Structures are given as structure tokens and as C-alpha cells.
Image 1 (cartoon, rainbow, N blue to C red):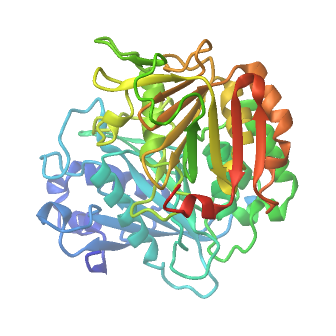
Image 2 (cartoon, one colour; image 1 turned 180 degrees about the horizontal axis):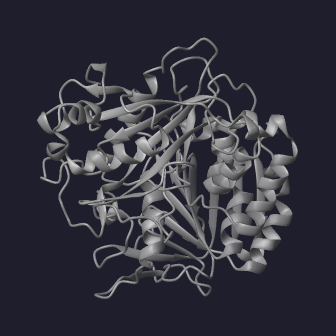
Length: 474
């Protein structure tokens, strides 16, 4: 990260010098909303990169303003520091950073980041580490051209302040005080970063981010109504109130899960033919009009295969779980299907799709514990779920009859496209499987291997030790 330094607010300086007319309109709009909340802090402390991004610097945010918020004692909302970014939206309107596309759409990426950090006793000024965190997230957005929206989760895998804190991941939500603004270059909303523990991130991944945010709002020491991050919080909401897990489980049952896939230790075998039989009658060649998954399902599966949960490894950039079916999400400026892996995912005329009669699925224990969620939270709600192997190109996608365009069908429920296996399960079969794999619902270590078999369906599932998948022969 480029060297950062505190500086006085550029807006206040411009106003003092009588240069308001020369002050960039995008900056004016954001400063105006900040002044509405903090009329007595017209000259807040700021952090800025020495070399601006548009001059070749590495940090996309021109400024991060830092305000002292007194909270609301009547609502038990503590005093805290409020950070506001400037740079994800179009501040200048002259194409130096963002392409100007008019006033009707989003300004730049259409949002700025905020963060609320509980003020510790004796602190006379705001810590600057949140500014570095915000720059890191901004770099991800600029490099990937993927936007954020409320409810997204960010797997960070490290204490946000580089301490020993349990707050190691983030959720995103609308800032409770800052209102969207209209600028000459488009509209800008404010997304607040909320620090969470690993267990809370996992619950958001398995249910949805908005549901966990609502739970956090109801627990004052875990965030409260304004979702203020306390880096010294030592307990998860599930430890504070054990009934919270029941609410998550009920939410998954009622709403389904927004988790569309994970990176995992998994493999599959075709039991229906000898390995050397490459040209049998069960193979079908995709013709000039390939069957395609619907755009929504294809994008979700691609995203799962491309990023997943990274549950077994730490990624270079934080994997972002996107609810791309949401009508409220602004479209990414980069084509959402542009991926080097796309050719391996969508069938085309040069790749054959094979119909299989019998399959054997293999998972490690961590992946196996997600099978009940896959069935109950995804397939019973007409969705799909993908396991992408961390050891190669292998992928297993479970689809329900409600997923349009899948190349697995009720007549031929097992189909392989290269190393990608699709398995279509009817609702009746899902219910049967759930009844027989109940013991996988717990993450407690149990004796392995475990085997489950449905001979009439010609399906076998094994849950095996990690060492099986780490073997070079696997």
C-alpha cells in the first residue's frame, strides 16, 4: 500500500479559499452528505494516498474521512469512529478514473464504503488501520470490476486490525445514517463494512447475509442497531445467545440458502462403464445448438467454480459471495461471464456430454457436512449447489428439477461434461437422502469412512479422510 498520511479535509480548505466553484462536484456531493450528519466537523481528519490512483498510485481511494460519532445513549448506541471513503464513485467527471456515463446511472461503481469502529476509552483520535482495510477492498473492486451490494460477505481470514481479534471477516449493509446522494455524474449509495467472527460468516454463507445482519442488530455488544464493529468482542452471537442457531436453521429451512457452491475436497467415479471405454453408446455429442443453463444459473455456477468459499485455503483477494439474482444489484462493469474457466463449464459442440448410469461421489468430512445444507437449503428450494475440487478441475453440481437448462434430466439424472458432473435429484429422492444422512449435520469429528448407498438409484456417497484426497493417486 502506498504511504498514507493524515490531512485536513480538502472540501473545507477549498471553501475557506473561496474555491467551491472549482471543487469537484462528486466530492462536493459526498462532503455535503457528511456535513449533514456532522455539521460541527467541517474539517475532519482524513487519510489520503500520497500518489493518487489516477497518477499511477496503487490505492484507488483518494481520501478516507474520519468522523467522531457520539452515538445515541437512549438507544444504547456507543460512541464510535465513522469512516467514509471517496473514490469508488466518480469524483471528477472527466474520465481520469471512471468513465462518465451520465447522471441517470451509477456514479463510478455506484457506491462508497463506510465503517463504524467502537471508540475505546482514552482514544483521542481515530485509528488509521480501517483506511488501509478500505483501500484493500477498493483495490479488489477496481481489479475485478465486481461491485458490492448489501448482504454480501467478504472472507478475510485475518483479524481486520492485525491483532488477535476474533473479528476476521466482513458483511456489507446500507449505512444506517448516510443517505444515497445524486451527483452530476450519477447516484451514489453508502455501504457499511461490518466486522464479524468466523462462525457468523459461515452462518451468512449458509443462510444469507441479510439474515445474519438482522441478528447482529438485535445484540448490542455484537453491533446493535447501527452495526458498530467492536474489535475486542470475544463472543459470537451464538455464544451470547444459543437460540440464535435455531433462528439460522429455521431461516435456511424457510428461505433456503444463498450458498451456491464451495471449494472442496471431492471426487467422483463413473461406475457404469470401464474407464477405457471412451466411445460407448451412452455418450452423446452436443450438436450445433448446445443446451445451455439459464443465464442466472450459469452465472451462479460459474461464480461458485471460480471463487467458492475457499474453505480449505486462503485466497489472494477476498472471495466475494454475490447474490446475483438480486434485482437491486448494479451490473458489474465487466462482463460477468468473462472467465478463463468458461470453456470448461458451458457445453459446446467440441465437448461431449456423457450420460452415466451409476456414480460414486467422494467427499472429505468438511465437505460432507454441507450435504444436508445442499439438499435442504438449495435443492428443496429449486436451486443448485456446486462442489469444486481444490485439487483439480473436478466439479460436482447437484441440481433440482427447478433448475432450467441443466444437461442432467429426470430421465438421465447423471451426466458428465468433461470433469464436471451434474446430478439431478427429485424432491422425493432429496427427502429420502436427508432422512439417511442426518448424522452429517454435525461438524463433530466422527469415525471415517462413512458410506451411504441407494442401489435403486445407482448412487453411492462416501465421506473419507482428508488423506485420501491428498494422495497423488486420487
